[in-house]
Length: 202
Image 1 (tube, rainbow, N blue to C red):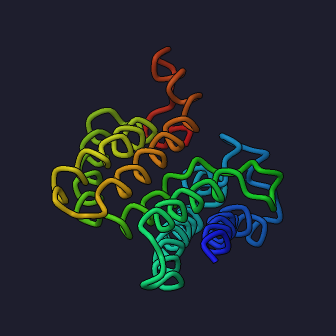
Image 2: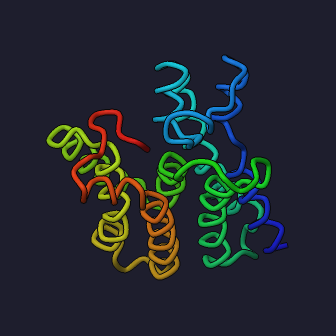
């Protein structure tokens, strides 16, 4: 049962909303333009604001739903480690979806949904970091990286004493590492001083 719960979380996370929205709206493959990602930023760049917002919301919802569903399915029989594994699996599903040859987005919006299901207050704090960094630097990629990196810290600060804290921190740390790792090209451009501003290459 635990394996099936984690597999379901992966399959939920792997629904390629950005790809499907652009395919439906324009008949094109969003991976063949811009950054090549299926996330909200590249969708916005290729198909407009409405498509980008829809992708952002749907990707976040699938991350939240994966964790919530894992909690519901396991019930009293589940363990915090199963929930943690499901959280990571949802982000892995978005980044490496079986439907698109294991190549899609960078996991930011799906991560927001996953993080919100685990530690909503920490998400609010990370969102402030994102907004401030983007406002000051105009780099969406940098804001995403720093916000993701801050999640374990905010969770630890606000949920110390929670018996499930070790599992939550593990899930958040692994998820943040995946998201940051997928931004390796952005990091290279940021270091080199040639990252695109405002829209980024996310």
